[in-house]
Length: 42
Length: 212
Image (cartoon, rainbow over all chains, first blue to last red; front, side, top):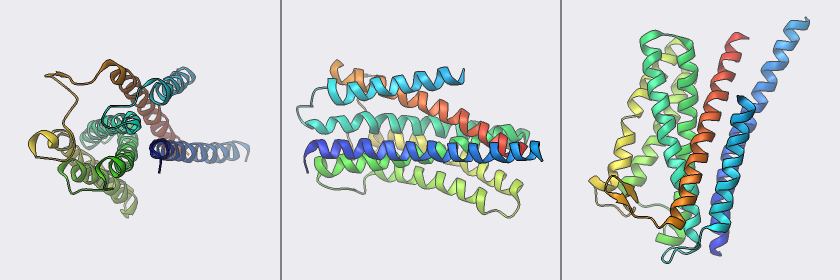
């Protein structure tokens, strides 16, 4: 494997882990917002 | 404040990435692999920061029993697990080509793995407890105790003979050339800013979930 492949693998891991965490937070925000809106409507 | 903090963090991360991948020269010994350290070291420092926040907030929760401290403590524990996990992964991706092994039973590596497992355990005891209040108390106690591992991780390279290199920046001085120091400093600042934003957002989400 070329040195740049290792470097990109490390940056890819960082992007996946942090991106995955941000995505999870975003999904939970949307879920909570939807439930709150539903409660306000109903 | 939120859009500004998110925008400033994104800008810092972009500048850090540019400096790490385009501006930093290859190291004379490590070659291009030095670029991995611009993620590895900031991730480790962010893990220390998250662990400190988790410890402080958890101690305050145990003392005051105010749920707001629990939200911050939980956010800190999640981010300590995330960043210590990232430190381990990037360390292995650096270790394989440079040391020739993915893993070594070295003091720095083992204490970092213990730190990661402690925060995973901290999150597990919270979710597995039958009584939510008991889960919060147990998790807070684990978060306070887990922080004791942070100085052990940091000083493991001084206290023990290890494969891992010693600190490049200490009270004795800086052993890094400016062309490596600048990307490292900018990326460290970017990761600490990212930690701050994620802590605030995670704690806010936890409070919204309770209000619901």
